[in-house]
Length: 252
Ligand code: FPP
Image (cartoon, rainbow, N blue to C red):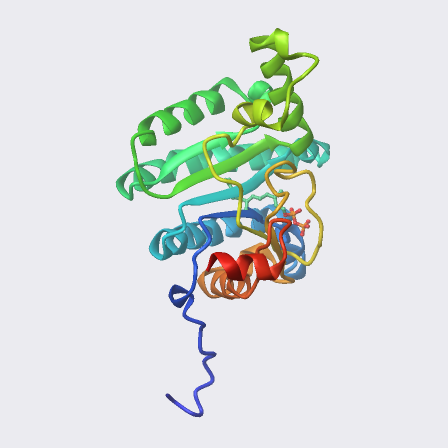
């Protein structure tokens, strides 16, 4: 070990349990750019590089599902030029990255309300999902025009449309298959960058027992090493799902 090395030793997360599903709010792009006297959208552009690095690292470390919040139901309230930029960036990312995802055995899924997307974006999303649908590696989900309220509402509406007889007596188990992420286990680890400590209408149903990790690092500065810190923190948590510690020991 180099005693005087200035490099921080990274925790070896592969010694511990790797979360199966990580959900991320990629926050702080705008402030990161502003600090550099650049337009906010510069931060979003740089955010794509962070996302690429996080995807590669998740794949390497054996994370099965990575879900990122790219655009919330509430983000339509942003200045029109930023909304237009984000939609364009989404399209551009699909165009430039899907081939690489396909080659790397990544399955891409998009969740959210698609009714406000352009025909071009809708087509790109369907083509990307179709192309990667038989891949068996990391499942990357992009949440776009997604909101937890929207998800629970659309699931309930679909359930009652399919099974009107259940109107007066449906349970959690009935709703589950209609939620946007019915294909994935609930997230084990939630990460929010950018210093805010809230869930902001992301995966409300699915985050019920997720470990919540917040970091001040803005998303453009987040990468492999920061992901390692988050996973290392997760590995120190005791997940009880409503039980007490002694009950967990008994099952070990
Ligand atoms: C939040 O930061 C970030 C967003 C609303 C957009 C996230 C988008 C990317 C990282 C681009 C890559 C993703 C895809 C799939 C195209 P903010 O703008 O709220 O930052 P602030 O809090 O500093 O203003």
